[in-house]
Image 1 (cartoon, rainbow, N blue to C red):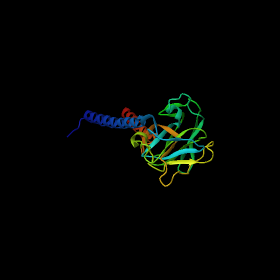
Image 2: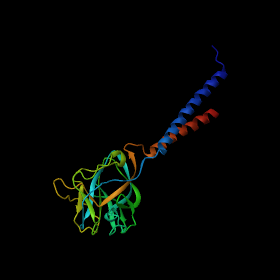
Image 3: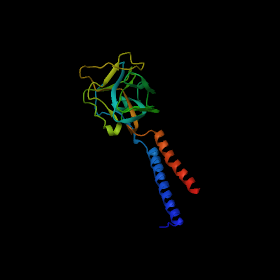
Image 4: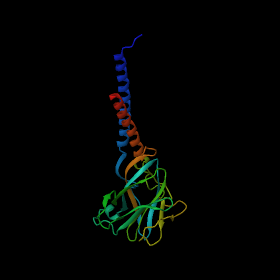
Length: 245
């Protein structure tokens, strides 16, 4: 059976069109992956509570936490403002240095929350913005702040409602998460001492931070998406050049 040359050209053109369409779709899918935003949760406090006793003392104060199956973006560091909680306008009694440490005591980020009502108020904590950092998933950390004359809150076992993992990516133990360092409170240092053993407090608040976005563990890095885009678009261009020949 004789095949008309024009039919072969038509079939070849259809085949090439399908190839180009498929590669273009691959490239567009990769672009979608690359530009799809992380799960935005818009400045949510990592730790919240409703009622808690307060105290004073010159300590570095903090609490331990872990990340769930998310990369957690930290956008601001903050300190509990007891005056604001009691509807007083004057804000913090002193400036505080707040920091986040990894499990071996390496300081990852720190910032100063100024005295007074300068820091941004969110749920009775005053915050100062930082250049966002990412906390790795399924890892342990400690957040702490300096404290000399400020009133701080503290909670016993179960006082802190556990933040939903899908909302903040943060988990806090129901007991024994509170830590302190009895160094006078003026200089930030990795706190490891735990009060009231064996159960201990849940938190010293003290410090807090805001979570900006979450990315599920295992999400492709931008480089991988860019490579995929390149593969798709380069293939399209190559086939288009061959078609012209």
